[in-house]
Amino acid sequence: MSVNHYDVAIVGGGMSGACLALALSRLPLRVALLEAALPDVAQHPAFDARAIALSAGSVDALSRHGIWPLLAPQAEPITRIHVSDAGHLGQVRLAASDYRLPALGQVIELTAAGRALQQALAMARNVEFYCPVTPMTLQPDVSGVTLTLSDGRALSTRLLVAADGGHSFVREALKIPVTRHDFEQSALIATVKTAEHPQGRAFERFTKGGPLALLPLPGGLSSLVWSVPRHEAPELAALPDAAFLARLQQAFGWRLGRFEQTGPRHLYPLVMTQAPWPIGQRTVLLGNAAHLLHPIAGQGFNLGMRDIDQLVLTLEEGLSRGEQPGDHEMLRRYWERRRQDQQDTIWLTSALAELFSNDYAPLVVGRNLGLSLMGHLPLLQRPLVAQTLGFGVAPSAR
Image (cartoon, rainbow, N blue to C red; front, side, top):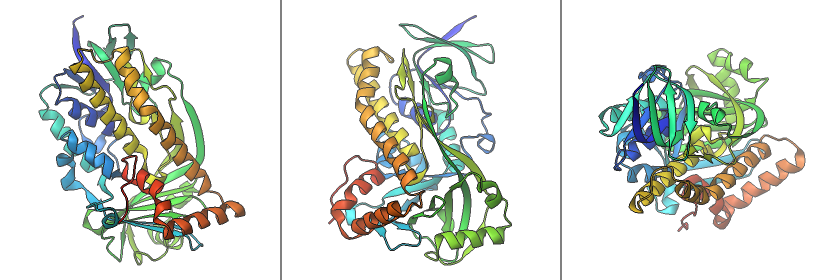
């Protein structure tokens, strides 16, 4: 059996895998991208009905790697963010203009992002797309990893990147341990229309059952991400449109007027998964294979994008030093630079999810007081702004 040789092989062609492949296509590397789904965005499980909020830091990184121009035409800017606690006075308002930024972030639907990324991958000169195909066996050694594929082919790579999702085959095959925490919630996802145009406004509202987010979409629509107790989710999702919109109106309020229309509702179980040590012998985990977060504060892909950015920079730096992709020292430097941010972000999102899904009276009083103070003292907003922007350190407000 002939074996094709690559510098980097990426398993998984969703958002993380596709963005990494395109970023690496600008380097003098031979890259393989392995994807199990057919090359049809409408059938791809990673490019589904959801929308993601890209932080300003993610947009900056995507721009540096030449990817943002592909996504920008399909994106809607977030210019203002409103955070509130249902039934209480505490609230925080953030505006891009207060931080001398054109936008706090951008929202893009995954179907639109997938279409743009796949078109770009089809033209990438040094990326070979294996699709549809899945790895069957993996054999790492000191010089690389050999993979046998479901179509009978085989390949070897100096660096193997697992970007194959929360149920990663690569992670399981290499026995990389993970920790899990079940929030006992489901995310209810839908596209909704309100009487009032969002005009770039994003909302995070903490309700008794869990956080509710509305993200602005092109055409005056909004993407709903509503975290609800898992035992209540199927009934809520199955309600007739009018009854569902009435429940949503009650939970969200009237900040955008009446909810007029809803698209199909989809449910996703919310379970935090983390690989505490996401590197192995010539292997690194990225995206949901490395960490799967609660959607509160919209940190999932943004954390992954910071990982992608650092991995590309570390590879580029290693090449200038004469190192090979996947060398132990190179992967050690990558993880040393990413460890603290990963740990901090995972801890923060999990803590926020528990805090704002709890109706224990002292916690409710404490979080409402915290929101009230942040709303009046810009200095206290800095940690929230830093996480929102995705730069690590927030710029000062005027």
